[in-house]
Image (cartoon, rainbow, N blue to C red; front, side, top):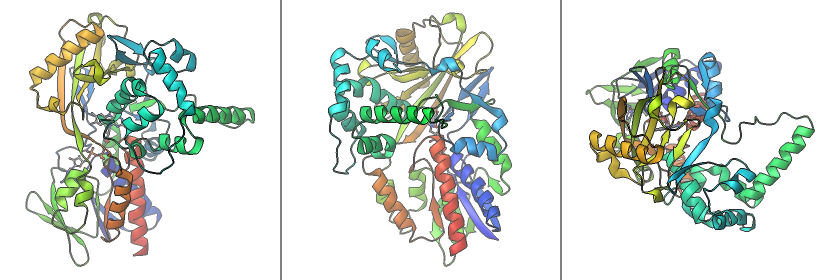
Length: 468
Ligand SMILES: Cc1cc2nc3c(=O)[nH]c(=O)nc-3n(C[C@H](O)[C@H](O)[C@H](O)COP(=O)(O)OP(=O)(O)OC[C@H]3O[C@@H](n4cnc5c(N)ncnc54)[C@H](O)[C@@H]3O)c2cc1C
């Protein structure tokens, strides 16, 4: 029997544990998986908190259905029947700019009519067609890419808010190839984004004419999907499906190489031995755990900073809200000078998130462009969010329900050169047989990315066991 220890019980660790057991069984291997989690609960960033009839997501509120990874995993753990698609009226997204909410245009004519981008900004965006592709093969920041291809206004009003919405990050410091590899590919393969859109739309039309099945009309973004009990249904079900041992409240403080296995020191003073160790902990925790061994990771891991964030849930009686809340919510360009990054209209996105006659709004505050927000007192946070909601949505009343969640290290930021550093990390891991890594610090921060990376890490573990 091979002992395999997984560090970290977030989605990455749980998916890895499940896949190692599944793939191990398929390969006819006898594996004993132990999952060690520092906190007293599983889930990591995933935590669906039910209070006073509200369902508040501490971290993620769903995954997109345009990639198969999480959906496939749901099928394998018998969770498909609990899947919950976001409501159709939540497809509308807004940007707050110039003192008002603008619907994010989804088509060419809607874009032309929209007042979000000025006419010079629209012309500059259209000029993307003529911007030659960069062919030097080097990475660049998201902001440099956006300025070069789309113009400053598009960066400020479209790209930067989207980056803060997904990564709580700063586009001036983030890598294009690591954060949006597909966009980088489109420039290289088609010569530009508009050219890519036109050619891909033509290809789809041809395929449809030829009677081929073409990707759903959900568009490139896919449909946000969760579960009846919140996104935590996913990690709960994974935890219940695992055959191996789960040890909560178990923090690994150091990992050391012995002659033929790995030794893990725990915060409670105990020591464990394991033939395989797969870290699914955040990169800063991996860095601390491997400090005493010569992994050569240190310089690579220190270049993955995390942004802090406050998540602020406000519940209101519906009649206190002057807007119809028919949509997903809005994001705010930094140039608007507001405290929050944006607000998700959670009870519009998914059903049963608020008691009858009430609504739930979830605002994000902080991120890489306003890290000081994490040091504000709860009262200061609530005041700042109230002021923003009054200005943006016209909500004058006090919320009837308030919860403030703190993420000291919310989401990792991939800096330029990130992909090369991950390749180098893997090269150095090759010198440390039996040690593997996964988690959102390396291969993508979305839940789909985490599930995908952990499935691949599990395959590497099984492959190594079969060939060692
Ligand atoms: C506010 C917020 C909103 C988000 N929204 C979305 C969204 O809507 N959709 C989406 O796809 N993604 C979203 N994300 C991103 C996504 O939630 C994360 O990338 C993903 O959940 C990370 O999973 P993970 O398992 O890699 O890491 P984590 O969830 O961070 O899990 C790591 C685990 O390791 C444990 N650990 C750490 N150190 C040790 C140690 N020494 N010993 C033992 N255990 C240890 C931690 O306690 C933790 O449980 C959001 C993130 C945040 C913060």
